[in-house]
Length: 187
Ligand code: SF4
Ligand code: SF4
Image (tube, rainbow, N blue to C red):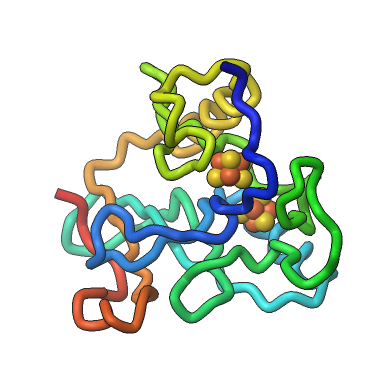
């Protein structure tokens, strides 16, 4: 079955998850270093306050912390980390499938263009996507999404020895005790 957004759905632009665990806080939309400036400038033009935190860093030594950032993340506008700041939930405008409109759709980050594909071989779809909940990774017509994911992977390639993940410190109030903030070395 061809991938097609569910009528009126905006779930992936609203709901953010703890990744890889609650300790790391809610993740934002992945932003590559060469996308960051444009996203910041689009937000400025639209007079939107946005928060971009680091996401993945690398280093050749363990003791120094990350020396290069491979990816950033655009955080949600709600205090619990949800809802992309570019999602227009106020106006009456809707996307072609009836969901809330993305204010920067033509310039949206590669991560948004890749979704719901989260792995390319074998093709794996995010089961939290409303369409994918039921399609069991059998959706077709995902060429553009796969292309975008490949571009992200190429841009994030590294031969550095140590990978660091940034804990955002953001999440539900009830999880405050479990959530950390700052760089954590991947094991
Ligand atoms: S940038 Fe647009 S497509 Fe991407 S999460 Fe935000 S609203 Fe959704
Ligand atoms: S969750 Fe899936 S179906 Fe819903 S808007 Fe996002 S990609 Fe489309």
